[in-house]
Length: 433
Image (cartoon, rainbow, N blue to C red):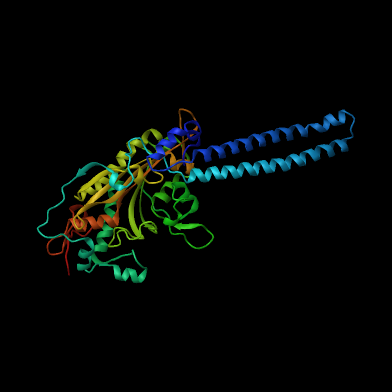
């Protein structure tokens, strides 16, 4: 959520920043609401002062010759009127504040100055490329053709069980999926210093609101029936970041590099806005798995933390020898809560293009303000908002796709990268039956 103080003190900078996203902020509406809120607050304060003065009136009336009973009756009449007026003023202030909160909750984060202008993913700016796409002496297949030829990737049975945009893996491909997950977790915990956590797959409305999925993007999540307000987690970003909700950390609890968490989790997304896109294969599913990286840091650390976190995701791609490129997202492609995002896009020979496999984002204090995730600054002794970051390290299904397509051989077998062989009982390839 945006800092309301910035909106009040420097609205022009907010408007200009949001224009980079293609978002038009309704400043007159906000200013009118804020003026009404201030008026209601002033009125409430005046009524409180009047009530305090009225409470002292009994003694004055008695001193002037009124009986105690008459004095109390007069004062009680005044207090009853003031109580009614104060209740109305408080209700008005609360209603206006609710409108302001709704406006702010539906307003995205301000993009970092280095975020480029642009409307779509075509306007994202390439930062670097790593690795050279392999040349094949044959026409490379995509992962669907490879998986079905191995008889270990079955969309028809998954469709019978659940419906469209679901898949079923079996045999060596199912084992490879598990091996990728374990390799990522081991790398991030042992080499990069993340603490592994196991978190709920079901989250409440407060958790989704805290990270920015609600209220604006309710249709993108699967809501469970019932009165509890439960949802299937769209990503581990939600439950893991909410570990810090309502917390005030001491400096020593944060350590030198802040809090680093890694979690393996299934993700559930309705893909409400992607009908017709990537309907073939594993690229865009209702259910998929990720190894998610989350960092919670001091504000002065978040820029360096984003570079480090992105590097940790890149380390997986490099270890698996998967060619990729790194892009910085333009304003129009930037996620709702993010101030700055790097996408890592892996080369897929079957599609002859780069496809997103990880998004690494710095949210600054946007999520922390919603979550009230704070730390006690030893220099001021006061609680201050933290900064939150997250990224996929990596999306497991898309990494499986990349390993299959980049490791394919002419006979339909899949060559496995060396780091994965230790998780596959020294198996170096997956071959057709």
